[in-house]
Length: 325
Image 1 (cartoon, rainbow, N blue to C red):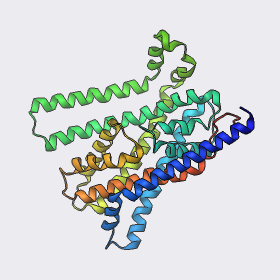
Image 2: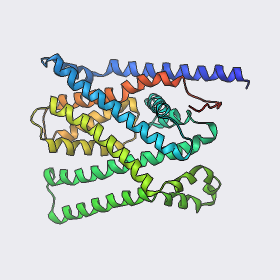
Image 3: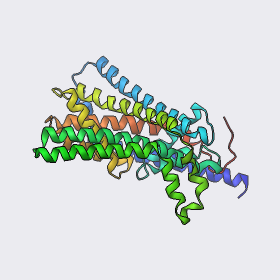
Image 4: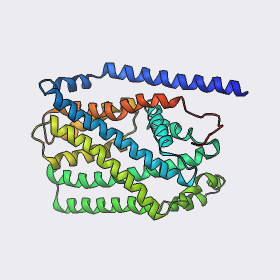
């Protein structure tokens, strides 16, 4: 294609993505009864208090995604150094594409199309390292929370409980050992003839040293604390009588279950709400409040960033001609 044809096609794709994203978002927001329940819960609460609490949760949303941008920038230091602002652009753009793609696959495309064409597949591999780090923490904290949950709410033989704790420890150690030795994955892929010819794409796995992996998982841990705090703040605010430890335990379990379920970001609110109700019913009967809190965090963490990301969609670079910032 000529340069002009590429520009026209690129613009058409970008406009289509933005229109599609807004249509999905609008359709879901209009049909979302849970957000209406959330607004109902706020009636009778002083407006200043609402502004302060919601403002803090929204601020934490930006902290969360800025941390993710910092992690993405660090991950790319081995491949194609990018500035922090470009990292922010690519992260928010990825969130826009993620809302209508299964298991957030669009998030990969939204980020790597900010890279030069030769670095895009390697960029996907690098991004997967950060995703694995986040998954490791989700599984570790979730496994610990599951042990506490079983101990408190499920009658079980003492020997079986000790076996469960032992399995949870092995489970956590497996994830930690695998993550901090992720270069082993490079060696495993090299052992197969079929994958060996693609080693230029995944050989980046061998470059991450333990010190660098520790820094990456530190970013992941900071993010985990931030979005856990969002749940903690809203549940303490809107669901009276909950103990702090119960909120932390159920939130960790909620993240664990969510990570194991295939989902579409835009419809993930339904899965989150059902999961949250099933978990929190052990500690509260305020089911409407639980669903409302979950839906509001979905709105703040997914929908608002996706709307902001539509601006950055127009900076996507489908056909190359990459210009360094």
